[in-house]
Image 1: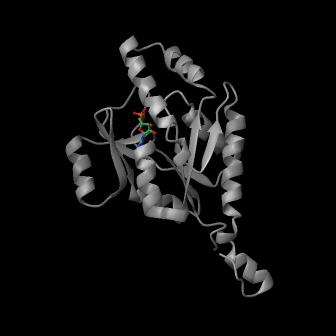
Image 2: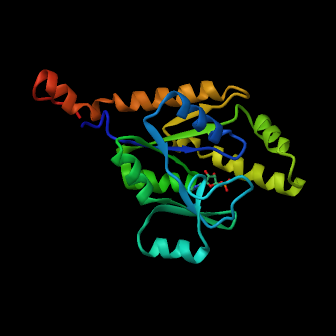
Image 3: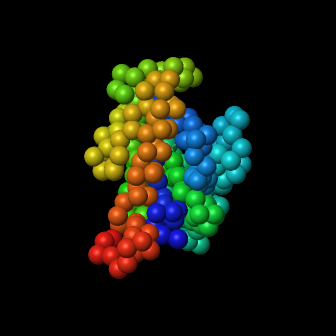
Amino acid sequence: MTGRDHGLVFVVSGPSGSGKGTVIGELGKIYSKTDVAVSATSRKPREGEKEGVNYFYKTRKQFEKLLREGEILEHTEYNGNYYGTLKSEVKRITDEGNDVILEIEVDGCSQVKKLLGDACVTVMLTAPSREELERRLRNRGTETEEEIQKRLERALFEVSRTPYYDYLLINETGRADECAGDLLAVIRAEHLRTVRSREVYEEGYGPADIG
Ligand code: 5GP
């Protein structure tokens, strides 16, 4: 195998209201060689969420034990809860020869990039504008004005980290399938980079001075 078909790690970050979950769902319909790593969290399951599907739900104590035992690749505290990427999930997916998608926030993204370097590609996914982001957050309709303002502030902070990411994807309203197509374009292009192509080049042309 070469880097062209090895599992790479794609970090997809996006503020709440960006629709990143929907886009990643759409990607699954058009491309089967990726899998989302299920994170561990100390937050309580929301209605409809399932153990091992949305998250592995842990108490704070259990999470801290995983940390001590070195089972967690990166972690952060968000809204008073722990969230972390399990090394076992990344291994499970790469062992299958698939690409890993980490749907994690900006702090976790910078940790993973530091650890994995070139094997990690970072994507910021967001709504087309501040106004649209705010509209989507308000449309959820379940929160107080204060909570909405807090979420919006956090969302705008996350978007402001865009310059540190490799790619920016815009999720136009009602076009999650197009955005998934853009994400697939990123995935395909990253596999074809010359730094990941040494073996395939040498197979066809002999010793290479690339990658
Ligand atoms: P939620 O509680 O809405 O499911 O997630 C809150 C935020 O935590 C989202 O931005 C989500 O992408 C992020 N998140 C989920 N899992 C992880 C993780 O394992 N690590 C980090 N750093 N962030 C995560």
